[in-house]
Length: 243
Image (cartoon, rainbow, N blue to C red; front, top):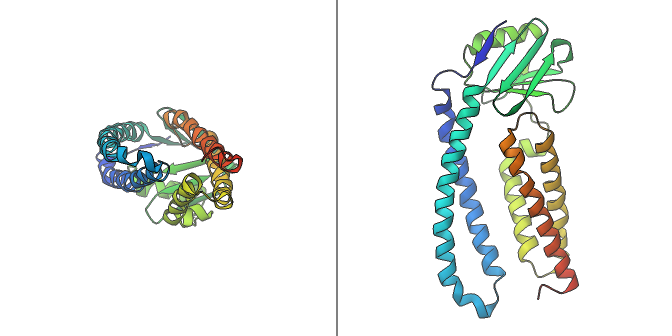
């Protein structure tokens, strides 16, 4: 019963990409936060922005570096604990603080490989998905064994979020900006509805996913706070209490 783990030095291959993604995300979110603050500050309080915004930026940088360091450490722990076990009847994935996934061979729906070398093993149910990092040891042997179970196909994105992740992320930030800053009730509502649906859907997918660790699950509750704050801000625009 062979088992496969992340090869030595495998985490270093994704560390740079992980940090780059975090930097891009922060570079987008930070200006958004500052812009929302400026748009929602009355003219009589604008002079305080010259003091408050630099302080916010400094605090943000401190929190940002702490978050990156902690995220990299947690991700390394997850990668180091990753174990894929193949038996005669089952494929199982074990990982620290993450639900175990066990798929019987006769329940497999598809095995595919992405352009980045990630193997995707799907079961009958949408949540029964095992992702095998490209940094797995003995990859050639693993692919041969999986091919004997089910032919490995070329992975094809199934949703619009997978096909266009960057444009969709920018659209989400744009909707959030419009919802918080727009004085026009119709525009605010037009931004609020799709954004609320997306946040609710994202929260649900995180909660049911077996590939997300418990720490992220706990943090995901903040999505509901953001969602309700957007709804509340939109309601205030219609009741006239935001003036």
